[in-house]
Length: 390
Ligand code: PMP
Image (cartoon, rainbow, N blue to C red; front, side, top):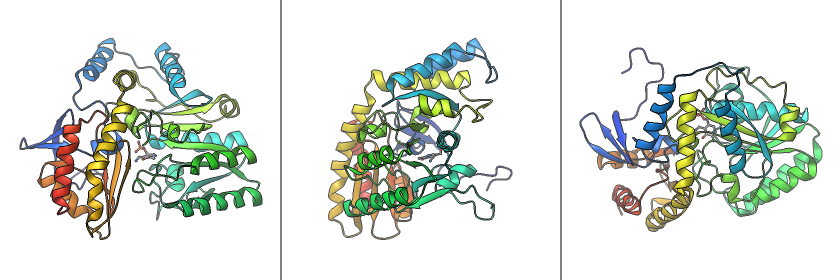
């Protein structure tokens, strides 16, 4: 269909505008948006306060290369540090989640002088070479890849969590080249798998015991998405490095960040950080306002409560034979089918005015706006139930 664009999408609908939790296609049909750009939407599309913040900065007009000092960058970094868990104290400016992940990998290696990063397999961490090698993006035919990633199985049960922890400790005992454990607080793109209650506190204790860094890729879980401002706060852990993206911007900017402790920062001074557009001022104006609104309107709490309500509405689907499990935390939910029918169900939802996504052939993925209302949750749940034949 595309003549010149290399990455033209394959979705069946072309959307032309959005408003609140809704999208509109070229024919004017209105859809409830339960995808919101894949873990991105926060304060609603076409939010007037967001538009005003972006326009106000555009009227100022300023762009400088990364080696100039801009007080607004410093002030926002300070704000992020106030909000972030644990002892994070310095911020690297980035334009995308993939770039933030690259910073995290580089800083982990530079800080420890060690090469290996232990991670959970089958999880997406971005499209650039390092992030792709850490995660599951394909680089087949593009080798050589970045090496130095050890992948443990994704634990789906408490027993599997214990096995993964034992495997990690075995690695720590037997190898001296491990820099970090790096993964997501909730395995979002893998199908919304939620770690067991003590998984991450145990991983953190092992990291401390053996002197390796704990790195959380919070690109998909940050800024209220999981019902806490940071996904790490679900588990009470204090990572040495975290990455931010997606809901950090609410879909109004191409901006991301990597937060590190003072110790990591001091050891990472050789890491290249000159990003031409890193925190360009219009992007920054948008992200500042997005974060301000998430906090002012307590959207983490809304995501927790309305997300739990949506989960409660969808949970009865588990009584259907074709459904294996309905799971979720905050505004990240998944419906896992016993058959490869997620594309069919998503298409049925489109027809009935609901936008959903799927993480694989048998898992429907839902990441609504953080400010979704209970009424909208009910509307969406009804369309999904109908599509599932309930
Ligand atoms: N990390 C995680 C956990 C992600 O979900 C994604 C994007 N799906 C990325 C990194 C990469 O972010 P981006 O697409 O902004 O480069």
